[in-house]
Length: 112
Length: 117
Image 1 (cartoon, rainbow over the protein chains, first blue to last red):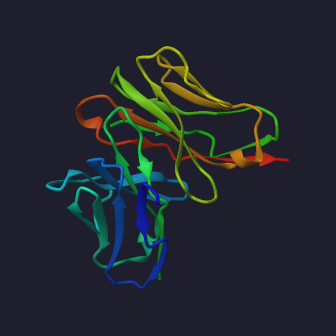
Image 2 (cartoon, each protein chain N blue to C red):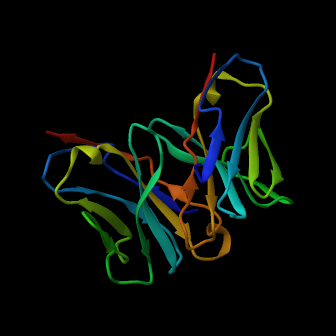
Image 3 (cartoon, chains in turn purple, green):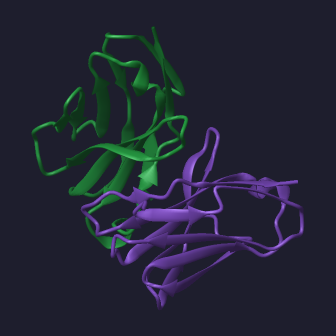
């Protein structure tokens, strides 16, 4: 099994629908992140969490919410999806500041 | 805020040749970490190489090496003996050592590398 698992892999949803993207990890890392990737824009941080009780907004949190259900699980929700939230979404974990990230395989979300 | 700039949106190289991808960054910190990630068409993000700013020696991983110029705030990636499997999007990333910048990676916008047979 992958160290960081994201579900679903691909999803098409309609404008106005609520959708949840899920992430689970077996690395035992405390730090978890959600990024979105858009062509020509690189990866931008949506939310991050250092433990279950520590959740923080990133650069582009508007229109998103998160839930850290356990050390290993970190979910991203779009309360009312809009077309400009069409993107590739990545969950990542980190062991600490001197380390890079371990990424999930991404969720490609299309809002129509 | 730290910024990472990749000035080459696209690059191409002939198989077996060498290519260098550029990355510059802006920071006021003296200690930090720099990374190169590879994203092939499978879209998986793969760590290629990591550099600690306090180390003067350039990091090397097999055919991948970096040219780290701290004073110039430059961190280029050299790929030697390019292979078809090196075709991917490459992202440069920065992580601070302390203060408000150590909690996350800041990414550049990426360079799409094509390898021609």
